[in-house]
Image (cartoon, rainbow, N blue to C red; front, side):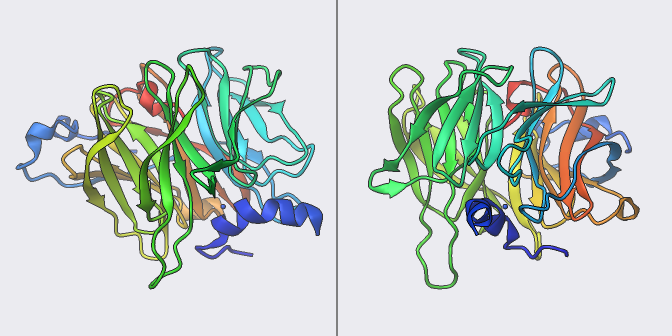
Length: 345
């Protein structure tokens, strides 16, 4: 059964309930350099190529939803299945050369929506949306530790995506769905201090923030707003402990679909994954739409491209794509090489 646009909210929040009872090569002028803001650029159309199927719809949860792709030091692509049942493969690693899929971590309650390796300690950090916590494990899936949990300023958090600065401080989208037209948006962007573990609120009243990535200077965050179909730019102070300014950088015409996770390449281009249709939109830092990556309709019933990772130092980009026909990994050529901000979240 094809999911409706609100299914991702159902997917994340309903997992515990279910257990008890969310290519052509671009020309050089499309590098994403902000200095090209006044030129006439036409967005290229690129087709992603199927790599392998990683998961099937789970009988216990009625769906599968791959997310959070990130490359480990071992060269494998790590990813999560948000709706995997207790004991099922919740964190997996894919050897892209042999197409071997290994289970890295599982537990009896987590619904993990993103994954990223910390530059400070090399551990894999996971956002558990349904249970309001952030967990870390070793690259081998051992020694699970709760990094943050509970109520932040009186409100339970629902961590969705995450990004790290060079010091290992973590920046997290705290998702909260908005009931239009009357409800006040209540999502937040959080910061978790690497040294103290203290969680602070950088921005509130956000319309369901989802994707989060730093720009190339680590001086601002690109935050995609699921319930507003836009990508906001939040400028940070020098030590990245507060937001000094913010504005909408890109509006996205998604129709029935919504802006999901995002990533940034070495040219500063923003790759915006879409939930509701299997595509990724690429914008230059100045907002220009550079490219659209799509999945062939003939590949089956796949309705979301939730996230992507560009292998650092290469233009090999990989997207997590899911739907009633299972969870898959697709490959496409990025417009510029991958950097740390291209790798997970």
